[in-house]
Picture 1 (tube, rainbow, N blue to C red):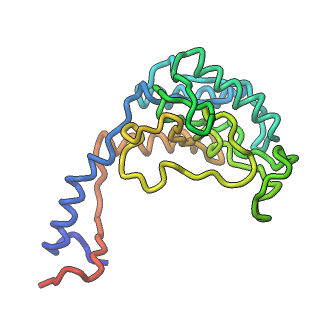
Picture 2 (picture 1 turned 60 degrees about the vertical axis):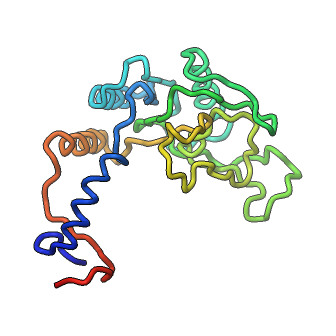
Length: 231
């Protein structure tokens, strides 16, 4: 590791990074962000409002669902409490337009919401349940498994008719474009504000926002892999 301070070649690399990082770190349009929280937990609603104000997200983009107060839910609960109500919210708010792809799947062909921020209080995991598609020709490692992360399920929740067992290819993997420019309205970028306590969640927000206002100061080290001759 070569310290950036006192080494001209490393400093040039550091300054180059400072120049290009803003292009990759541009904040999303607040109107393109929806916030999902558990309205049966007051702290979840409060955290959602704190996040909304901090990021200047429209009030209309808050989505509160009456969810179980549990980290793990079964597939039926996910479908009835999260998936179906969230699709209905997107329909009623005219956030997306649905169509069909070449495989005949119904999915968003236009989507005003590109980011979904999930607050603490929304369940974390979908438990494994009975096979939904018996007879599917899957490797034994995947056969009979439909457990999932809630967040990963919500990344493509607008796509209807996907098999529940087995993996699903990530169409955005290795893309060098932003989600807004990738022409993939059927996907949303999912993030989560979660920790062991509500106080920690609020601190996460404060700690992320403060450096954006005042700057982040400190020593930076750049690993140049010995590709630049020093002297």
